Length: 128
Image 1 (cartoon, rainbow, N blue to C red):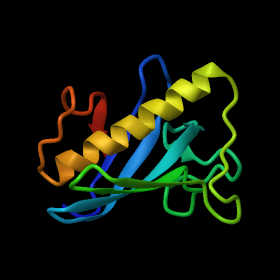
Image 2: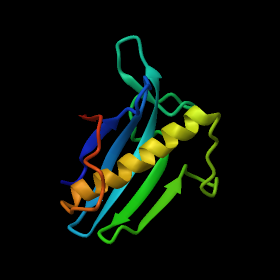
Image 3: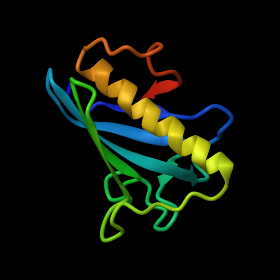
């Protein structure tokens, strides 16, 4: 199940996030998330507002998560020397941020094939 990717678009949003499982065991999941920034004229997705790269690999990471079977999780936001700092502009950005954190947590349990007491699977996932 390693290197699986899904696109998650929160309700009411045009652009969303690429979620990439980088490692998975029966007891944990590592997930990297890249934020979508737009599309090219040909429809290819652009990631990372600052560099506008066309693939997620060199793009800035929005967050990295490590979720364990017991519900404990580690979230690192951004990359580089920002010490986890992210800028959220307005309530809509806060809702979008909360939605991706929720989606990552739920998807981790789907990847581990474990039943966490959640109110259903992740919605709005599109295979990439």
